Amino acid sequence: MSQEKNTQNFRYKTYDTAWCPGCGDFGILASLKAAVEELELDPHKIVFAGGIGQAAKTPQYISGNRFCGLHGRALPAMAGAKLANDDLTIIINTGDGDSYGEGGNHFMAAIRRNVNITHFAHDNQVYGLTLGQSSPTSLHGYVTGSQPYGSYNEPMNPVATALIMGAGFVARGFAGDQKQLKELMKAAIAYEGYALVDIFQPCVSFNKVNTYAWYKEHVRPVGDDHDPTNFDQALKAALTFEGADGAGIPTGILYNVKRPDYKAQSAVLQRGPLLKQGADYSFLEGEIRKFA
Image: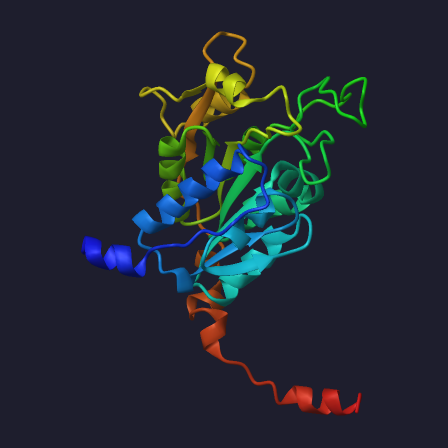
């Protein structure tokens, strides 16, 4: 398509936010806007969804269809939306608590179902909306106002979990590297099936450990020798977190293989989106009269 058409019809507006100045979510929002514009996705055919939390506010700050769900429940709701209307592009933005804590069961179920939805997890290793409690991905010993002696829990590794659960597309990004993050988002959106991008997102207000400077010192893009179709290589990269070997935490597409998605395995969905199949609701008339 021409640049003129792209600029005119595929431009996404962004709006004033309630995020703290310097929040890593700004980098994620900018990368998301650039990704959907470069993919020339029609704003009327896209749904930005979230649950509860600072990350989950993202749909409120970009033009397009929006869905704000319950805490941890955005994934199943949007799986239903995609099954009902396959013409929609579904992009879910949730935080580490929303994704892996309150919504941890739905996270695993989404991988198993493999419905064609895209999941961007803003991983700041803290509950920012509720003023700084440790989250499922907080490092062991992480000190908070409610845990002055540090977190006793070992951190969850979401990318390793996704791989072991059988996800076909798993990536890790950093909000401070918008150029790389934009490309990761584009690849995830284009993937046919459940796609996870876990995004390191500095929280300038409550996480004084995992800062922009900390991430810039510790993260590195996966090397040219990384094969995203090799599960063993992907798992090794996923498990490389603290950079004990001095190599740093790998970012990029860790794993990208084709898996049969939910639609491909459903005879009903092969007939087309549920929205277009039609339904006979006449049987409801009698049921409704019972409550008259």
